[in-house]
Length: 65
Image (cartoon, rainbow, N blue to C red):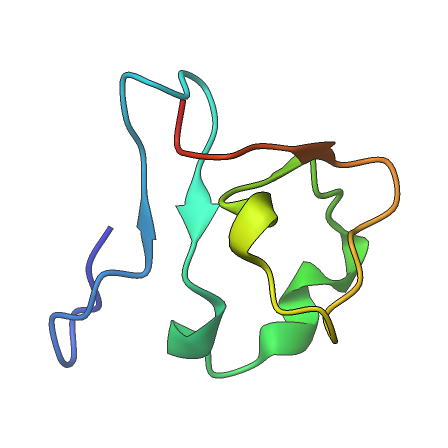
């Protein structure tokens, strides 16, 4: 899905994660909209900065697949 104003990608879907969307939070005017959603997986978790904690209950994936 692309923004009608600037053309930025707001989220993406793909064959490697059917039925799911990757939301690009920085594109949202109100990122608080995500407060009621559940994170199912974190991508590229093995390269997460040490100062960023894992999301409780989310699968920790090394890549997109």
